[in-house]
Length: 395
Image 1 (cartoon, rainbow, N blue to C red):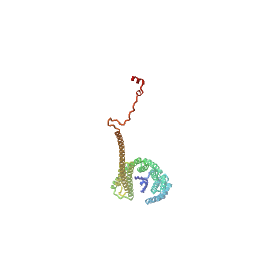
Image 2: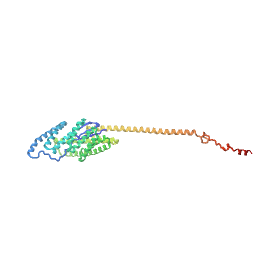
Image 3: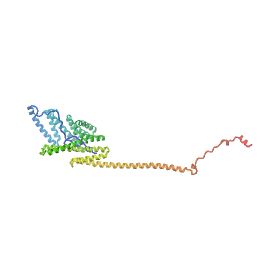
Image 4: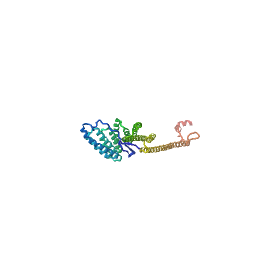
């Protein structure tokens, strides 16, 4: 049975994890708003002039990092972000909003690189970047939860399920308080880990929670899409390039969340199957396929995967039921044979007793003919007569 897990990384997608897992990537949400005020452009004129070269340098580095990311050169982009972080630390301080922004981007990128290494089974490199991400995430509950999710993925892949479960529990505690949008993904990861621990009833509960959360999210996305279409009908002006890019990102985000909901249905079906609730399992698998087909492109990879899962499950469950029927039939045959042997045994005993009764039966008096003769009683009074009495009789 397939189980899907989710790594909280951005901008990359892959497959091929053991235990037929699926590596899902989530695009980042907006950065956390900090209380510190950005100092760029503030203060006296001399300070502003002194900041201009730093700002120009940061803009160049930011463009360079974006170019590396677009080319999937994440290690090069990481080096650029580290240089930006050092510059902002010296210019604005570690408590500035600019510093936190770059720190968050660096944390996000470390998580991304760690999951790429994990998908390639380079566990040491993956853990190294996760530790770095954990240090960078200490000031952000959002990125701390993301890092804990990815640490759970790492430990699950390493076979340390207890450690994976502990990190997921910490991530849940953070996300429940902050009502994070990634809460549904964390519940799905909890489902996957608990399932491997053979705690299928608990895994089912987390899968159900995830489905409910994702259904609400899907309804909100649909409502936003309808509102957007109405606005587009009112505005007939040409869209700018950046607007098109934002629209593409929103569409990708919606497609990703639809995929997650389809997979949540799938994981729910897996747990039903483990609990031998086969009818519910098949119905849930079918719902996953129908939902994906209705809301994703026809050539989407998820549709093929879910369809294969459904077909395999139907065949396996049908085979299991046929084996159960055959097993019950064999058990019934054995039970009947056992009952027949008992009846035959009782009948044989009855026939033996009946034969013995016929042999010992006397037709004249109904008594047995070969009774042992009774012992003859000898009266001593007749055998040992008194001589005086005999003489009297003679006279």
